[in-house]
Length: 241
Image (cartoon, rainbow, N blue to C red):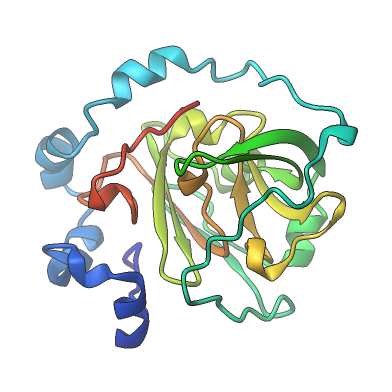
């Protein structure tokens, strides 16, 4: 199965996927992501130039200092949804985890909420120049990755969202203890406009890396020809803080 299953043409137009070049053959490339071609050519050709430098600055275990709950700014988190908010039935929702792993997963929200819960009060920073102190609650992404039993050489984690958005992270950032799959905001169930039922949240990445409405996680050994919705339009890939 390929990583990105494109939505209908109307949604493609909304999300401006047609601005990207070469996407008509993307499915073929993604279906071959485990082959020698990717290992020897694509993995080297498409690896982000800023990755090695910024990874040196990331302590993969050291937590970012958090704020007191009294510092939460409930009205400061700007909602960026373009003109489309997906409708997701939480009762039927499944988080699919696949790729270079030994234990593919299909997790319901009940499954996810039974896993160890954690929360953090951190500053969400947008590339547009605004920030908001938010408390996110959910589970550590590394718990999901551990459950999926990734193969030894996995280096990248891809995220697909219900609205067609897509992202990719390096594995070290994904395993950071403050990288969450969040289903709560400020102690309440996550609102749909903020990414319910499940979204990425972390103090170590800019806001555009923190995908909302995540439905699929794909672990890969090599970097694929796509990087992320905004990155494929010129934004920085690593986007670390």
